[in-house]
Amino acid sequence: MDKMLSMIFFGALAFGSLVQDTTAQTVHVVGDNMGWIIPSNGAAAYTNWAAGRTFRVGDTLVFNFMTDRHDVLRVEKNSFDGCNSQNAIGNPIGQDQQM
Image (cartoon, rainbow, N blue to C red; front, side, top):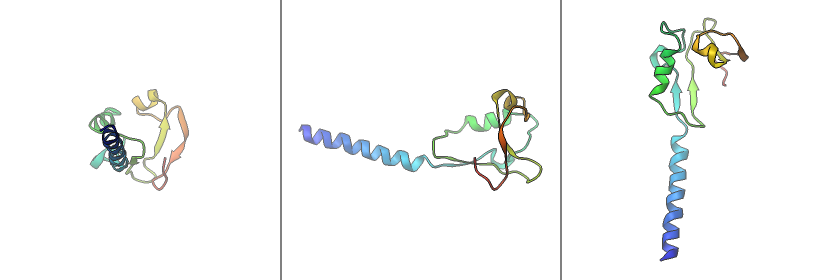
């Protein structure tokens, strides 16, 4: 009986691992149809967009924007909240590059 319980337990663990691997690679288009712009309500637009999603390691974020008009730049939280590029971390990332 103990052997049967052990097999069931490890089988459930293995199944759970497989399910986790298949769900952890989601593609998220940042801002959906809005894309990557400077929204009129600032960072709140993207905060609201992200609030309804669960992000996992292995997911992909896609930033759709007009080349030479917008870019992707890592910034500190205060700069993000103020929707400005002060305190940049690294260089801007163009449309064909990945973070």
